[in-house]
Length: 54
Image (cartoon, rainbow, N blue to C red; front, side, top):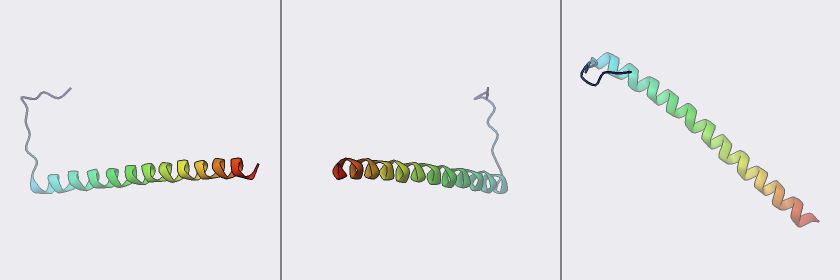
């Protein structure tokens, strides 16, 4: 894949663009993971409530 011997140094603008893309991916991943956690929590609450009502 990438040859470790070929190190290319990014300029300041390229580094800023790279970091911006990285931040946007991290935000999207955080939203997805947070949504899954809320979904699992809600499913657990519904299951517990269904067992208590019987």
